[in-house]
Length: 340
Image (cartoon, rainbow, N blue to C red; front, side, top):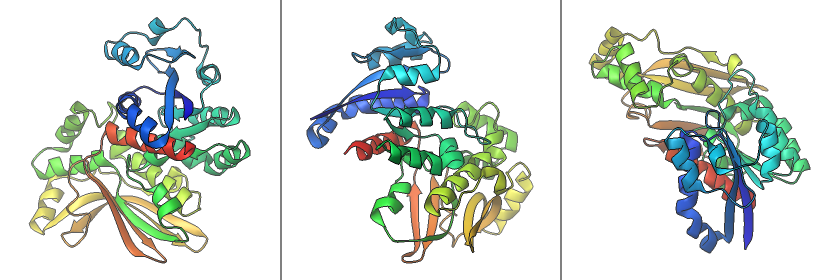
């Protein structure tokens, strides 16, 4: 029976969902995978940090954050900064879920480097390190005989990266197309049902899937960094989000939506990438989609990606109405795959 010490860097919606999932799956992990665990550290941006080598009270930590109190109430150990937290946690596995930086991936890249250098496996839902330092981090992981895994960075818990890594070896990805940003998909659907653009955005903010500043979604940055992540990992062709041809949905008007409906079509923010010799062309832009397309029927916050490979032709993965729980599952799956 192997015991693993876990540290959670980031305790927002996904981090809290992961804590709940770990508690729910604790018995199953022990009985089915011979895995036991304790959480030795939790770090947040707004509620302080907590390190306890004897194991954190996850129920207590969740309750403190829920009621807006500091995690320091559960510990007397002083943590100076995030790097100090990583070291003092003495974890075997770090779940890195800090906020994404589309332009540089920092400071998350350095957090991951620190953990890998200390001999920790790292599981992340943060796209920044994957896009901006993938090769470097994989090399560092190999040098320290640990794993750097990132299933939850695109399409939440859907098995996208592990599909190519394990289920379809010796397949070469030629191109992909899909709907990878759930917020814009819901905005466009709300506009089909009569909302103005602003009303649709406010609705998404009210239900918690759009930020106070929605530009990351509506201007296509979140979609672009997901294109970059898929291209970098699955095609082996590094691509920064700044190099993706990017157009958001701000210029889609209710009149355009209405005209599309009359023609039996819908607007979707489509993400795509295609090999071009030794290079890759990545694009994010609104497209008119007809009923014959698999993208047409993708509703609300659901996502889809269609892969074209050299051996299987077209292969599609669809995820219906994901949320923090499905992202948390991707992290849990990475943990199991890292240590099994």
